[in-house]
Length: 145
Ligand code: ATP
Ligand code: MN
Image (cartoon, rainbow, N blue to C red; front, side, top):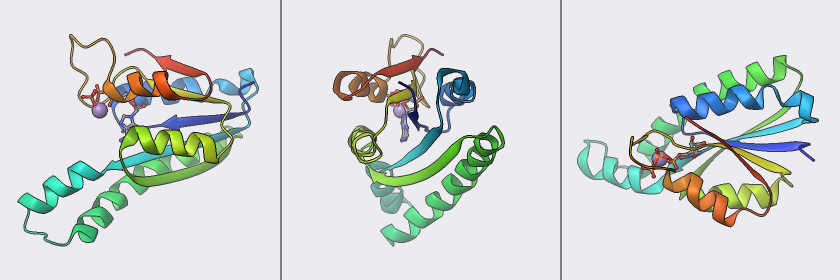
């Protein structure tokens, strides 16, 4: 039932907590983990607008480099535990990319944090996790902050 897990991460503390759960999912029959980070298109536009870097693609490459380092670390940790791991970096709207990867990779379940980088105290669920719960094809395991 949990053969292939999609783990979307924004590198927040809550997502890191969700990674801790993913690491224990051998016991639930998980063999493969797809780790996904989405570079937000809107953030790129804002950075390109206000920084000295005028080239959109240059900003994207810079951010992608940081993401790749973090994802590489997670990939190694999961491989050491015996998972088959695939890492993806996409640019766009997190919800759209998460749903697209869910369909493309034949995912059995998504493990996601209840909150992310914003982590506002009064908010019950982050906007990405809320819309993923609403729109995903398969089961969503939400890890609370
Ligand atoms: P909001 O973004 O609505 O202000 P938030 O940042 O607290 O609130 P979400 O963005 O919904 O909460 O984050 C919830 C979870 O969704 C994260 O723990 C992570 O698993 C996933 N997520 C959020 N943003 C991304 C992203 N850019 N790429 C991959 N996964 C993401
Ligand atoms: Mn967020």
